[in-house]
Every structure is written in C-alpha cells, then in structure tokens.
Length: 301
Image (cartoon, rainbow, N blue to C red; front, side, top):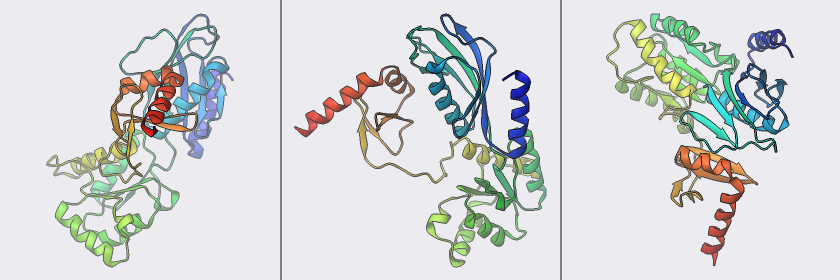
C-alpha cells in the first residue's frame, strides 16, 4: 500500500470510529528488509495493512500496536538481539536469523466513542471543547462510550448519574464535591443502583486544584478523564488477580493484583513489578520459563 492509500484508510477508519494504530519504521540496521519511513496500519483485531518488514517482526509489531491501542498512548519499539536496553524504548527479541534491528514508532488512534459528557452547563461545554482539542472522541450515552463525565452541577444530577451508572461505561466521573458525591451515592442506592455499579463512580472527577471558573473546573475534570483513558486512574474498577507470583528473573514475590506487567508464554501468565525484569524475560522467555518450572517443582517436592 502507498502512503496515500494508508492516509485514505486512516480517514475512513476515523470516520467510522474504528480504533487503529499507525506504525512507522524510524530506524533499520541491516540486514533487514524494513526501510526507514515504511508504514503500516494495525487494526484493533490485529489485522495489518502495509509493510514494515518481514514476517519475523510482524507478530511483535501487531502485538505492540494492539497494546498501544488498548492503552491509548504512543510507544517506541525496538526489535533486536544486540542486547541494548534503553529507557522509554520497548525491547523485543528479533526472531529472524538475519539478526538485523528495527525501531518503530507506534501512534494509536482511539475509537470514535471514547467519552460521553452529560450536562448542558458551561463546564460541560468546556469539557467537550477540551476533549476535541485532546483528540478524544465525544459520543452520546447510547453509543457505547467507555467513559462518562457527568457535568450537570445541580441541573438534574440524579437522573444523569443514574443514566451513566446504568450504561455499559467502565468508568463514570462526576464533577462534584466529596460531600455531595456521598449524598448522591445514597440517592443512587435508593434508586436501585448496585454496589458493583457504584464502584465505577469517581467523584470528584479530578484532583483538588482549587478550580473556580467553568474552564478551570472542566480542565481538572479532563485530567481525571485522561487518567482513566490511559488506564492510570486509582478509582477505576478493574478486575484483580488473586495471590502472588514469584518473578523468575529476580526471584521476588509479586502481588498479581498490582503487577505492572503481565506476559503470556506457553499458556502461562508471568507477573512483573518493574520494567527491567519484564524486558529481560521477553528477551529470553524460554530460559525464565524453565526457571519458573524448576521453582514450582522444587516447592512441590
């Protein structure tokens, strides 16, 4: 596909609201079939359109692109066997016998229905404006938006909050003080909202920054929205794994519920609490998988 073809595809995907990522080769060290400037589009389902190198790199690129789409943030990826570890660069092993090096920049584009803002207040309008400036798609409540911001500020708070909590959104944020939020929680419980649904509510919507004007209030609320979209919100309701897992790289016990990275290898989930151990594992997963199996056998004996 030519650059023009890829551009037209991106426009079409954006118009349809389909999440995707643009992958660009930013460095290629021979021997490798990849060329600097080569581009491809990866869809959320893993379909790749374009050319960014041979089949040895394709699986890594697709996996990294899908992770970027899910996380909602760009990343720099390096596929090589030269042993270099650089901060801010996601390292992957080069499976090709040629042993070349490819570095790629992956820019994700979120799905169309990312945020729903409920309310007709000045703060609500400011939040919609900021969302557009941030590249966050704004949708209606029935369009499957994963995040809802309730910015009613006294104008129909309870009906709007109930509508948001009954929606399939994974997180509901509300512009409200903690005292007001507690009263609204009680009101929602009286309306039949379950504890599980209430667990998705985050109020206040953002950090305490002393915001006063509608623009300031909206900006603070959008900080909370961005944290949820980037999966960095402490208030987000997430499924948690139970128990501990011994890191096969450093031998430290890891709380699976708070692990920073989870890597799959041969049907086993490996948990890591730091980038360093995770990177080392991915450079030679078979080696550390063997260490893990030996540790299990020792403990079982």
